[in-house]
Length: 112
Length: 114
Image (cartoon, rainbow over all chains, first blue to last red; front, top):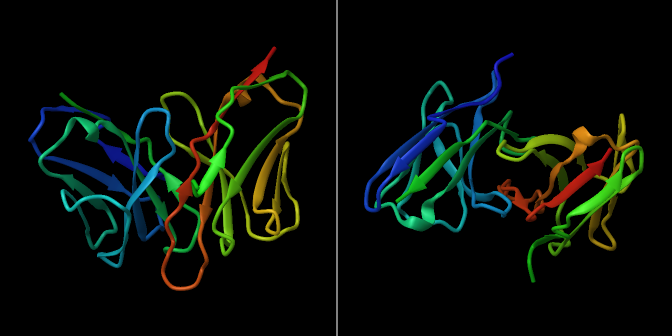
């Protein structure tokens, strides 16, 4: 039973660049949520996708956008990168929005 | 007031002891509560979830919820060095509407000493 997968594992970008992170949900799951985890902090909710629509959004600027595909996989895009965007980006999947969320391994983004 | 608060620790216990981790939350209408374990450099792993005021037990882990006092706790019996990790408490708000995001505390670092 395949768990949540994310790519790439690590990424280094410079300020002002754009980045795309990818997530494939656990087999059978249809909902994907994205979180940002800064060092020493708990994960912060970015947004959730269900039925290819953004269902809920956290307190993140419009530079953060996403997409969900018909196969339930998802992308997170961040434009105009700032140093403060350096963090571990986590994707979590669930069977429907209300249910338990399971995290992928994360993508470590470093902005120089 | 922070939405979900945890003592950052570190909480240090000897091997075989009971580790007690606590979490308080501010939204009185919160319905669902989760405990995740996160090893250094890894992603969070769901270990327990609880929805009612009854204790919930799973192996060496027991989750306790007290909605009146707005706190959740996780007890780890017979602690092992492999339990050494950061434990994250997550809360999901009132199930009314479509608010399904998880709000996390900063986590408590647990160290189990052999």
